[in-house]
Image 1 (tube, rainbow, N blue to C red):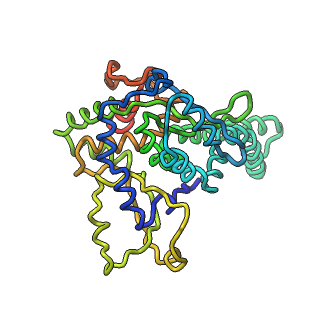
Image 2: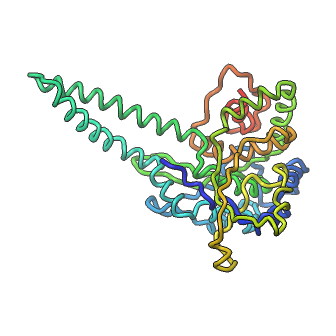
Length: 362
């Protein structure tokens, strides 16, 4: 299934400076490392990994979420989040028709229905093929052989689909990076997760409490400790993250109109994903102007300091981790020493920084 991440992931050139001034990476890191603000009197003592709100999808065939109800529930729990930090980026990330179609066809319920249908199709295809080339007197032998082959092929395909759902999802998880970059300031992370329960789909939008300061500090220390083998660390990350590339279409920049300002935008100060622009307020000639195809890699640049690399890794895998956390599909412990005392999540055996160490740095 092809990825649906397109030019919708990036903002036009006129909006880049606005986002940079509003939420540059270095400012967000400073906010994460700063002392926590005084909690609202109505906010209980949350722990990392604890689900705050789980909003079910309004429809299985057209996945959407009642964000106004989400806001009301979050406010009842003491989370005061501006619209520009929650509703706006979530609408931009999940309301695209192509993303909604992907959520339907990649849902656990669709895979649940796909399994028997796929088995019947494979069985008919294998039987009709073998029947032409193999002549047997006892047809039950042929039927049994075809059934076994069909079961193996169907199981292999379903296993591949199930395994792929444990990896980072370019069509949903990556689109939620810009949302988590805003919500992490309010000690929340968001993800979309689903599974089959009593033969029914269970797709929900999860808001999980997460204080990123501990994971940011721990992952930064790990990268600093590995600085003496930086080339080896970069090769590991490049091998496991080289496929995380966004192909976008940006408006062409006239070199006579100060295009050098864009070049001065360092990778350390721009957000991982620029804020999407769902509309076009300029003239039709500007909207339909020339486009330039650009590749944006989520692989941290080697020139970045350890703290900036750690922040980028945490944001890149934030939605993936939350999705696996709430659906109990996090990878199990291994012989790799992750430091159990440094687990910053009380509801799982791996916290976000340990998941990244196991997935990327191991």
